[in-house]
Amino acid sequence: MEITRIPSVACTLVSNDLLYRGKVGTGFDDATIKEISKLMKELKEIRKPIANKVLDEKTSKWLETMLMVENQLR
Image (cartoon, rainbow, N blue to C red; front, side):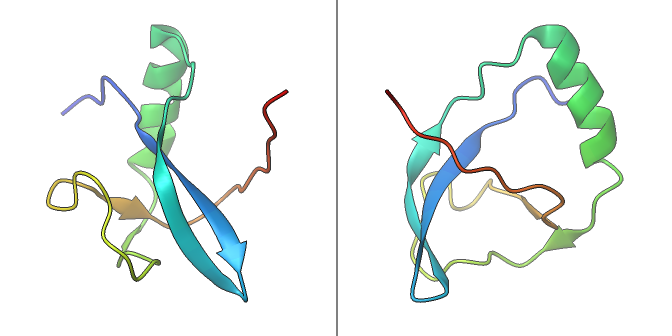
C-alpha cells in the first residue's frame, strides 16, 4: 500500500514526557511524500509514546523516531 499523505503530530516536551498538542501538516509535495513513504516502510512500528489521546487514535501508526525537529512559527 502506498502512502498518499503523511499526517504529523505536534508535541511538546514537558518534564521529559511528550505532550500531544494536535495535528499539523507537513507541506510536502507528492514526490517528497513518495520518497518519505519508502523510508517509513522500513521503520519499526512502536507503541504510542504519549499518554493522552490523539485525533485519529484508532488509525494512527507510531514509528520509531529517526529524526526530531524543533520549529517555530513567525
